[in-house]
Length: 513
Image (cartoon, rainbow, N blue to C red):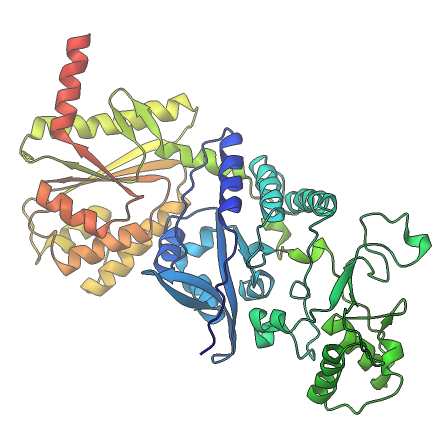
């Protein structure tokens, strides 16, 4: 069995540049870097980010006849296929909060076609087994402008200019591949039909790229593509000693294969139509166009495919109303989850107030009141006129048979069955979005009789699915309940406050005073 060479993409330089740009923005931008797994993508979506940026290898799977992003689950390479990507985006309720999806991949441009039109996307076509200098330049400028509240379109345009400068100054290593441009649907070498790896391996090894305009009058069009698309044009250059009219045998076989796939008979004037300033054209799509322009009786004019840096990037902006992310406004809205006053730092939405000695009701109540007052002080500090609404649900005298009825009465919910309760409960939290003038603080106490039941697990999951930036959820628990809830909670949502630690900090503060 033939051993295949490994394929990799350069992702680290891109990550480093994006992180550097975030830090240089001097804004409280929250971000997280995760390995590309399906479970991590699920988690990322549930964190309700403004932007999701995916860097991944990918290709076309001939068995299932679809494109895929290559993810790593439990150290094993898995194919995240386009229909799965589409289903996740369309059906995941948390996706409605995401305003921009960015993709860097070998299959970026094709995968972007499967992103619903309700979400804008920016993609960069990476290439495997090659150090990427242009991707970091593009993304660094793009995010710099996004963080400065440029629109998506203007940020893309600025990043495109940066990419162009980086590309043209790199005289010894300009690289454009036929894999980058969208292929003619009849092209037998289309990567989206036979795979990027397969298509690239069938590129003519005797092709070279032209980086000068073919006509003297084009000399003034520096760094721009002309009407003939001659910058980066693929032409034949072979070191073989024997040539026929078609150059080398590889070139002749390529033309024969195209004719065979299209079931077209050979014509003598095909060769003349494949010349590019007396040199044979090596791009598969240009070869196809040259042949079709003779065979096709519709008089359609076939243009040469572009081979320049612009083919590496693409913007999908379907709704002009979503063009402006208002990034600063969004991170300022998130700041209400970050406050540090005295000895408690509050930066999560679900807070577990716990202690082995959880019967210390005085200290417990003191801590809960302190959390509330922290948010009152913080809202005043940032001149936010939100009012705090606090609702207490004490389940001390309730068990699995009657706790739902009690919670429903506290939230003024009318329901016909336990299933109907969870539907109404979910709607209750979703409807909080319509009351941005309030910051809600929900206190749930004494869950000892129900915390390990399936009903409570469902209750807790529904709360997490409806997480909004304008409500805080506080549980008072013992250590056993704390450990159980930790297993059910996304790490990025939960904060633990130890009553004993708070007690020692209060004592230390009093002593210092």
